[in-house]
Length: 127
Image (cartoon, rainbow, N blue to C red; front, side, top):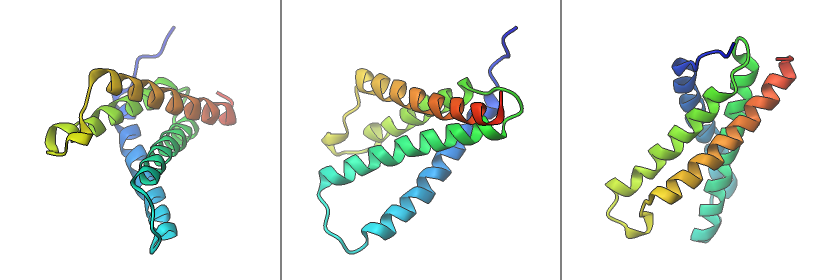
């Protein structure tokens, strides 16, 4: 029998992704302090930063959750991507235009990366 989705673990996943992004971002900021970088490099680094936080957060949930929790961090990553796209609605800058297709692609990628992290975390604990 399939376990129901735990929305508490989904919410905790969103918070963990945010925490990982803050911690990793602080390290990246210290590493790049005083250097000149292009806007494109910063966008690539942000993409890597988000992906790393999804993987690490999924892994952590996979390790600490009681029993298998694969879907919860993946759903949380999808929700995090949707929240990120809300920037487009509150920003007057046209470069941040949101589209449903971009949001879906980002959500699917985030879902997959967090799912992979959770899978490795569950595998490490034997679940």
